[in-house]
Length: 312
Image (cartoon, rainbow, N blue to C red; front, side, top):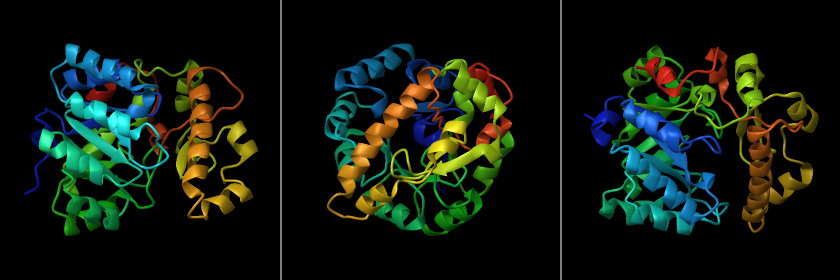
């Protein structure tokens, strides 16, 4: 039998409050951990290695429970090496790897007792990270917010459960306890939940962004490749409708060039991150708000612990 997430991390509830770019913060992690779940923050939420280290130590001062950091491991993240060094030195409980090859992270962190969970969207990648020694996979389905996968939860969990031996954490489309139970019944050891926590009082986003989470629904979520070069779920605001969701013809052309692809993605990622940051923190007509289809079930802004209660 594969271990549950509760057993893997020694926590009460098998729930990760997912790492959300520009949103996850110290307060959200502390609240999640103290309520019996766990949480992770994207390393890219911090401009420098020192800021990342300060945040980790601030969390450790307020809770002894395990929490994690999400690390972008491909070449679009020029801060990767320095961030990994900080996570190793601070002996973080677990790292969630995204958008790249986690080989170096696994090789360097496992001897230190740091667990490595790897985002995957299909069986092929899951088998690769299992062979590398990952402690678990995070199965990102087509209902996930942010960078989503192409496959439904049911299909993805069925395929992975049959073919890999390491634990599977399901990510995408979870808004209530019955969704958690459903994922566990289909072979997941736990769930990673993001979008509904955007609507928490602790989330440091603008009141306009939070109101949009209430006003819009699942039908208003679209996939855009214009922000980062990869599929990203965003709310279909008037601005998104105006600029479109597809990369421009010249961007698409350059993304097909194996020599230029990494540089184009880096430029698109930096530009897109700035757009998302500006829209998240203050009113602007360039409203690029990230969210998943789970906004359908967001009816109000609540304290994080109350949202968590709805899952457990």
